[in-house]
Length: 260
Image (cartoon, rainbow, N blue to C red):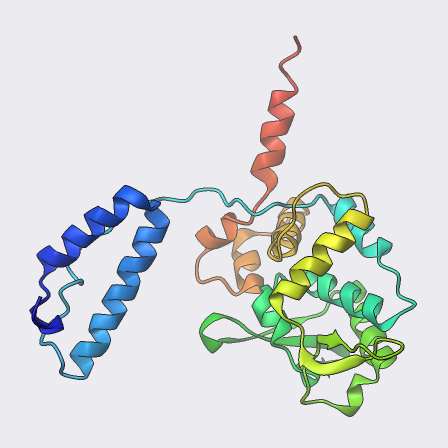
């Protein structure tokens, strides 16, 4: 093809057909979205007159139930209680797990927090989160979360560095003090797997598992999908429902009725 300006909807549609032969529908849809964004940028820059991908439709793909592993409230409680808090690392890890459970926060938003994103308002501790797209979102702390965050911040002396990252890596020197480097998501995942194994939890958890665990526990205790979506900073309750693990519990209960 002589130029990118010569790309037509037919070419994009043919490329999508080829992609579907080797990739799953969600991957193809994500790639089509990327192509659309690229050509939108080229149209804005007057490189091409129109977006040839705008009229191309990707493969249909509907998700009605999420695949994120969810812990029962008892398992989540056991994991949190299993974390030793005699060290800075333990206080950090307990606070990190708790903030995902009690605020329904994404791991990226949690690890992006600064120390001064934990603040007092109306005699209650609040957390300030920056979700996808840079959207600001504030949540009051559950009393357990308030206890864990206060213990971590005071124990690590983080008040002296309000603009520094809240969750940090550990240094290599004696005592493993906190550095000023934000904790990477990969390190958070390894920590969660290690803590889960120590608590005897066999479920293969992800960083999102605690978000799903908190939402499920909230809904089981009479919370509404609308309020859960607001707390999780979801645009639609349909997204929140993907984190609702109550359907899996219902299925297990029904399976046990097969008494053979």
